[in-house]
Image (cartoon, rainbow, N blue to C red; front, top):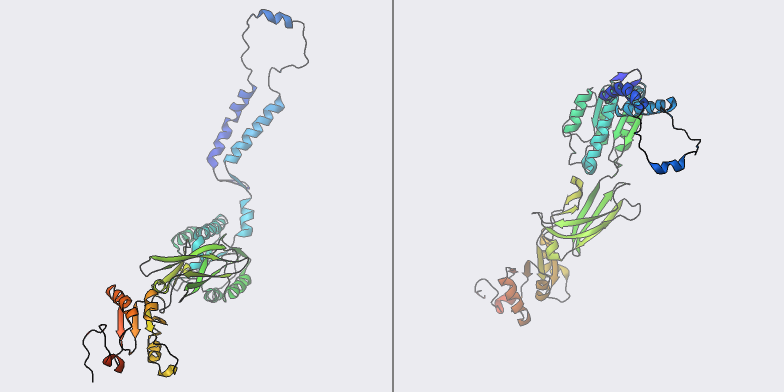
Length: 407
């Protein structure tokens, strides 16, 4: 409801103004006279005089002040706005709302929606058309050339969800460049991150009108790289300038079971940070992905490369310095590198490191110190791969699947 330059959000409260005359007579009414009671000790006060006199009725200025206070209180409950047409005309006209709807906006998605709805509400009060531009659309959109009513714009924002990829601001700038006409007001609800297309989009927006940027209070953090090393799982994360400085990362199997965690700490104003999840090689080999704990976005989860999560294979090194290219393990090492995590050592060392499989080159009888450990390891599910040759043929032991025929 509007009245001249005023707009009332709760006009029903104005009905209380009708009660002001009743309130006036109540405040002007004389209280009932006091009852007379005989109290003998009161004769001691006879003859006393005082300059303070009580009025029979409240003074007119006090009644007027109370009436004014009551009227202002009623007006406050009516939620008035002063000169909304003038203020919204300055902020209204053709309104363009730009939304970064990639995974980087997911942690503060409620703030993104609130900012978009606030901009739409201002355009609605100014009776202005709304145009919307998304930087990470799932389908090839028609925006921003399509004019929307406030109701249609609110419905689109309500259905909007963050996409599991980064915004493509260069593409958004190109789509905007193909749109005719300028805008009286532009609101860019950004994720706070800078990339190669941000400058192109900002330049195009400034060319089309006055730009107001809305940045969430806390922006996303993402994992930019992850790798499995002999010391565990190493990750590198990145944040925006106002992102959280502390957190934790965890390594998980393909089934989602946690293998270990480490603290993620950004030092000072640094935008990148590294963390190492210390795991034994046999445990680290099972890692399939890393994740920032508590971060709800696609960028907070990173799948480890094909080399991660591969089996831990031990190469039994016979020792001795020779020509590397003539070593029996050289070509085995080269062949298995793309598919397994490799480590060299003696049989006992590799079993203690919890290797999942052992590759044994042509060798004779296994030393008694290693036989017992190897037997227990095989009975526990280990896999032994042996290469047959002259040494094994001349001095075989029990660690062969069948009896070998010499010759």
